[in-house]
Image 1 (cartoon, rainbow, N blue to C red):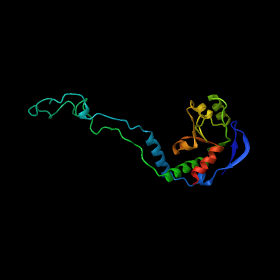
Image 2 (image 1 turned 60 degrees about the vertical axis):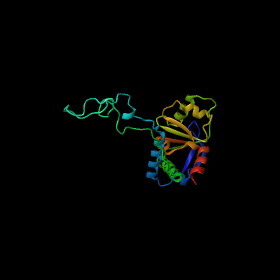
Image 3 (image 1 turned 30 degrees about the vertical axis):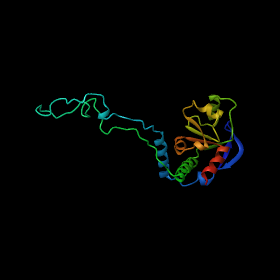
Image 4 (image 1 turned 120 degrees about the horizontal axis):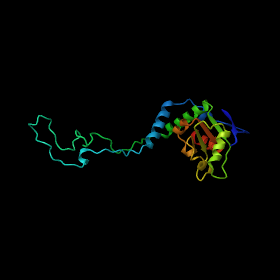
Length: 210
């Protein structure tokens, strides 16, 4: 698939790049996508939820009333789960939600997500660029020139460390700037438009075409 390379003003530079079929033209595997997205969301969970059991509740352990002769059900301490303020039975405990996926499966999931984006013509390739200063309005103007203001966008660049483009986009809700190393299936699918710089496209091809 051949696409035109645009500049930050949304105009064609005259250059064209070929999106490799091995990355952007495969038959998508929906189950691989499901597993990779599930892992990504699971890894976001802190797992610090906690409720108190009856042995952790502060209160007396005195028997409330005698065992027999009251006509009511027998009862122990006020910390019983049956009473208001008592412990909770089988409540949530701290745990780790993360799980492992094979590298080949994760690679397949990302290529499947990229193939969906290419199939729907939602990929734009930009020439490598950087902003001279850190200004959010520069990024807003770029999105307007590219006609993607109303879309949720994901910009993949070769690197975001100390990058003015990344810093200029942080205040915008519907956009996200990441490096090739940070690319994941969830972000690709969550974005309406995928923006790739020429340098990022080359690095991405080398990483996923193996």
